Amino acid sequence: MIGGLAALLIGLLWRFAQGDARVGTAWLLAGFVLTMLALYTQGRCARRTFYRREPWQQRDTVLTLASAAALALAILSQRHLPGSLAYYPYPPFSPWPRLAWPLALAIGLLAVPATLWHQREPHAAHLQSAEQRDAPI
Image 1 (cartoon, rainbow, N blue to C red):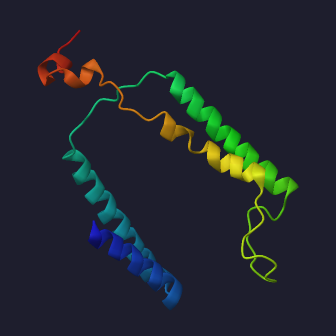
Image 2: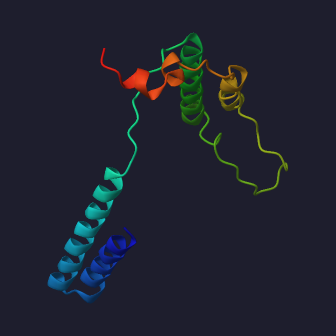
């Protein structure tokens, strides 16, 4: 993998720094082939897992709505109060920046997931043995 990526880098440098397109293209092609071969062989050794979709819960809806509201408030705050997302310390009128309340509320909404945090119940599929899980239905 490292050899393939190094060959890709050499090819890019050769092609753009030296200006010789044929040699650079050859290095790029060799690097691409080596990288793809490394990824293929690593993928063949990888253990396969099964995707288990978790059901959508009420807290997921609350999290999505809180995130969307935070994004909307941040966008509206920037649109209506252009300096709300920037801090410019000069001239030093005050050492503290002006607080944009919509932006503060938006940042506060991002704390909603912390109030909803708790461990999920494991699916029954996680508790099954490999023989039970792989048995034909």
